[in-house]
Length: 183
Image (spheres, rainbow, N blue to C red):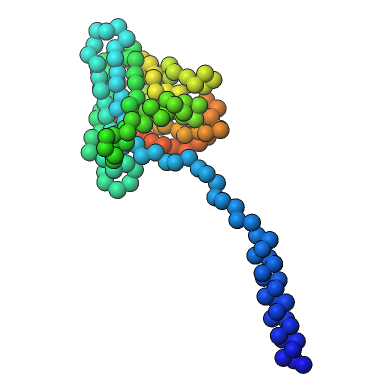
């Protein structure tokens, strides 16, 4: 009799386990945005008045975030009391030919936002492009004052569905702090 009861309990547990498994529904993992590899950020500065020469500053980490360290990390050197029209070029050079990530940022401008944080009192940065509602920052205008040295942090935020014109929401695609000299 004890064996029959034990056998019956084992069968009930087995049946209950099978029922629970049948009730479970496989839920696929959420589809996230593919993380883009950005190996290179190049800033292209053009004097608004056309007097001073163009300036280029590049940060390059050949394998992207992690792994090897950067191999190019330029200082931004701008003339004082000058307004520069500035463009940002982003590349993924881990593939051949290199992938121009700036094009993807432009195509998905409603999901991307550049944050600029200069430590110089004599440098102001204004984004000059937009997605129709909020600024983006692939294009900007940098206005320098008197000579001063400091840094400028540039962060590209990926903000699908949460873009609100601030740097708070979203994930960081790239974060670079350039030494900045206003001469």
